[in-house]
Amino acid sequence: MNKGPNTRLAELFELTGWSKGELARMVNRHAAATGHPQLATDTSRVRRWIDMGETPRDPVPRVLASLFTERLGRVVTIEDLGVGRSGQAARRQSVGGLPWAPDRTAAVLTEFTGMDLMLNRRGLVGAGAALTAGSALHTSLHDWLLTETAPHTPGTHASFLSATDPAGLDAYEAPPVGSEEIEALEHSVEIFRAWDARRGGGLQRKAVVGQLNEVGGMLAVHHPPHLERRLWSVAANLAVLAGWMSHDVGLEPTAQKYFVIAVHAAREGGDRPRAGEALSRAARQMVHLGRPGDALDLMKLARAGSGEETLPRTRAMLHTVEAWAQASLGRGQAVRRTLGEAEELFASDRGDVPPPSWMQSFDAADLHGMEALAFRTLAEHDASAAASAEYHAKRALTLRGEGFQRSQTFDYISLASACFLADDPEQADTYARLALVSVRENSSHRTWDRLREMYRLTARYSGSPRIDSLREELREALPKAPRPSRTGPVTSPKHLRV
Image 1 (tube, rainbow, N blue to C red):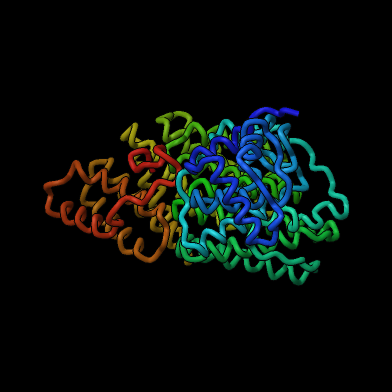
Image 2: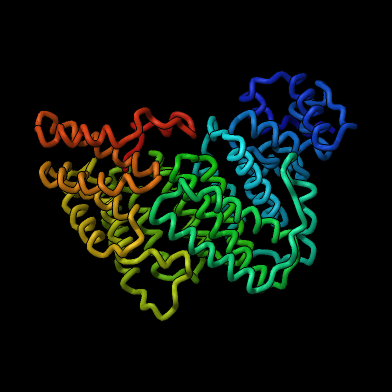
């Protein structure tokens, strides 16, 4: 039966530059090299996959995923290609394969991390992909996120590795785990989280992805409900970290995929507030890339999907992200109202309910840091906001504890930028040099992006010996050439508004 064209496969196929005959020959060679010499694909069959939506038989889907991943230099999963067992109905009802069926989350997680690790091993870089628009994610995930999660039945996840593990990657049967193993995994999340806060995401990203891949294998085995919920929580936390670290080093489409995986994992574990926080990370990514409208779409979903059990401190954090997006659009009244609500929510949190581990770092320093960022961004449209940005940045710096060097660097950059916007270049120079001292100690590309924006603000004061010296130091500190775009034209530096 003619199901109609597989548009996802067609779009990715066009990016490769292959002919249908070339793809058929590569599928046959790759399959033979991985233990399937009997496979005989030809040009007409490839045409049916693309033009008629025919679903290829195993092992072709994972062979295709491996070939496209290596060709495009970024992770391409079976879902991305639209050649999974879910068929054409899923392709018509979702955007980019979202949301996937509940029993597919562990499989998608394992496949995606496996492909990501393969790219690391082979020295490839992510390129040529586009971010899914915030409105598209909102449309695809809204109804799914707000409905109750159906309970899993024993064996739901069983043996998915044999069907979905990317060709050429090692697979094994993960044994069941107990509470001690899960406690060790939860502790590893804290270690990775502390490292990321201190040094940025570049040096530990692969370790986090590898750990997430292991957890995906564990989720292939049935566990008692209380242990399975904890495993899903670990998966959600690691996926957020993998996404944040990917965003920190400029792997933007990869980061977005991890944030979406985190949303699915959190929902599988029945933790809606965690799902909302994961969506807020995707929204922050959008603001950073100059797409505040997409960020606001995601924040609507984050706030709606978090559920009534969301603690006031978590809701305060969601408000700060929304305010930053509003600031990027120059909506001063909305920024001030939303940040006022954030302060009230934060103050109303009596602390009688301990915050979840993933919210413990959002303290008063982080609240003021986000307020400083929002007002500094608004000051691009309304210079009077610079004074508020200065105040909150100084408060954040006063309150910052040890181990948050990257956030401290961002505070200094916000403060220096606010001073430049307030026509106070002498104070700006002082804080900019403090930012330069700390920026050399981390691997965060986001820090470089914000330094570039601060450098842009120094142009109006060129000719001053002190500022000219600062400009020279900034040029030496920044990479000599712009980093390659991972998301297409929207990510060029001129679009960064932070």
